[in-house]
Length: 102
Image 1: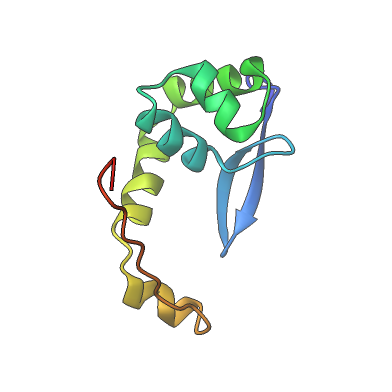
Image 2: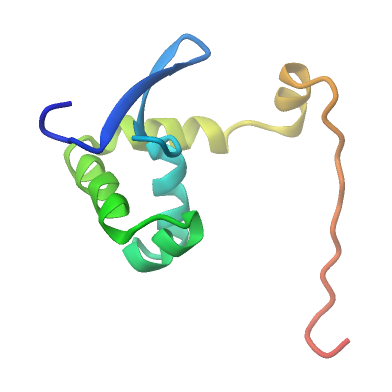
C-alpha cells in the first residue's frame, strides 16, 4: 500500500480486493478501461473521477495484472443462473436496440 497511495484493500465475500480509495474495485475500473482501449480520460469520465486517480489504478494494474485479470475472468464467467442463486430477487430484462434510423 505504501507504493500505491491511492489504492486500498477491502474484503468482499471473504476475499481481499484492491480498490481505488473511496472508489470502485480495481477490476471493475480495468474492465471498463479495457472497453475504452485503456484510455485514462475516457475511463475517468465514465467513473466521474479525476484522471490522476484512474492513472493510479493503471499503475497498480501494470504491477499486478494477474490479480486483476483473474478477477475479470471470474466475473465474465458468471451466468445469469449463477447470479440468480446469489441474488434471488434478480430478474432478467431484455433490451432490443433498433438499428439507427428506425
